[in-house]
Image 1 (tube, rainbow, N blue to C red):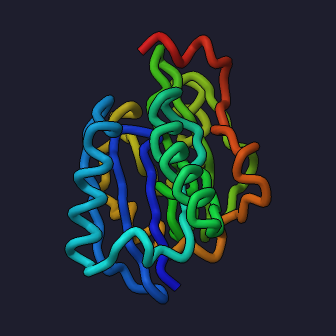
Image 2 (tube, helix red, strand yellow):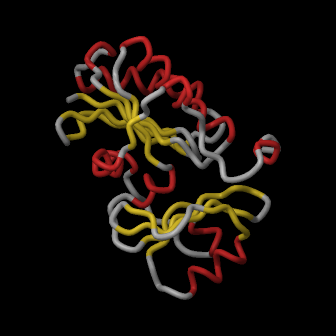
Length: 200
């Protein structure tokens, strides 16, 4: 099984080509607001590195948010066209789940601007409670109760940012991906009003 994984929901563009549980090629670049112009060159580079062509792909897995209003739609649009054209499955995972991976108790924090952030608590790939968007002050109070790992934009809480491999997390989380039955009805998952996303 050859799987194309893509994430463009936040600051990074992530592409991973995975075959039978092994990463064959990957690209992780911080390119805030430049994912659309970066995606296809990086995708072609990954195909070349793995020796794959588009016709080799058996399935696509993407993150479906929360994240940037425009960013989430970039990978999603490419995935929907590809899966519809090739008639192959499309599956999704949460952007916050992608950052947490399969780690034990982990807080995920991604900047939502205006002193707010997307926030979730994950344990071994599963959410503990709901994914929310709330103020940094509220998140600081919630995270102070337990000394758990914080990933993503940890610097917003004045913590050191941890380097993580989102490509490796994609690989580990493939069993948790949710298959989309109707590709055409798939829309990004947002945790706040769309109008708020447009002020970037």
